[in-house]
Image (cartoon, rainbow, N blue to C red; front, side, top):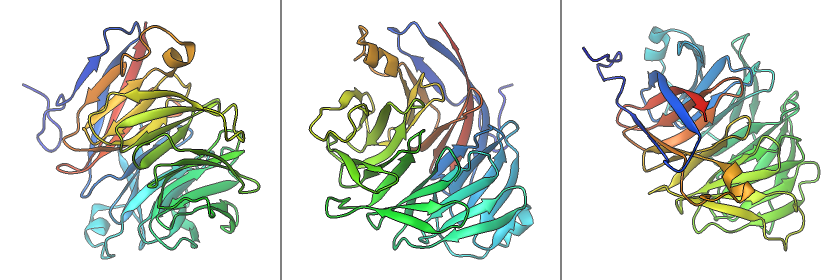
Length: 356
């Protein structure tokens, strides 16, 4: 008899296609399928790998990353822990578009359509800060690696830097040079020196964290940029766009705005690229798309100039029935997660084993 999940669906309703030109292979196993009552807008792991969080309508949900057990739900009405409390939740619709954890894994940050950013104390199960200052939906949040700052991006065409301890807004990024449309994605560089942002205006911008000075404008995409991610060593930035491509930007010349810094354009998705993330060691660049696939790219092939660098993704994973809106990789183990929309509003955990 074929194994099924709690909804009666076969647990092997997914498949993996390896690129025959690659000597590196991965064994992928589906660990959990977590159903939600609404679209899963975002997924993120805690730094220690213990937790995984999703953002959906009305709440951010916290899970045990090993077992897939739902721990609690952070909402505008407070912290919920039981299904009965969830059934009685009365607050209006407001999607949590982005979540992130503090480096010590003690706090969860959630940015929502209600224009607010909430910082939750995970252990105490209480609200630590509610950050106000943006005038439109919050699309993206990130934490600095030293735990001092939170950065946010909004539909109001601005990014903001917040003091994580006090909740105060330290500075705002954006001026006459843009962004000229909503900021869809933000990321803090590993050393904390730079803030990167993708925008609906098709441009990737990099600002100086300390001065808010605009250092770079990368305008190589032909459509809105929906996601940005720094490589673990901070030397490169990846961007994903509605033009169906990913781009890899060389940051060695940041500040020299005449330099050509796009090292490679990854082509393979058949529809919008909605999310990109580097694996912790920089081994893989992972992307999620409206074409319902998750694709794994090998940046080392491009950077080394190896033969076959233009052979497309090294692996294609298909398991969702709709757009893959968000992808995340655990910083602590070979575990990654994907979030999707209708019809099942799924979030899935998968384990990877790499071998040559």
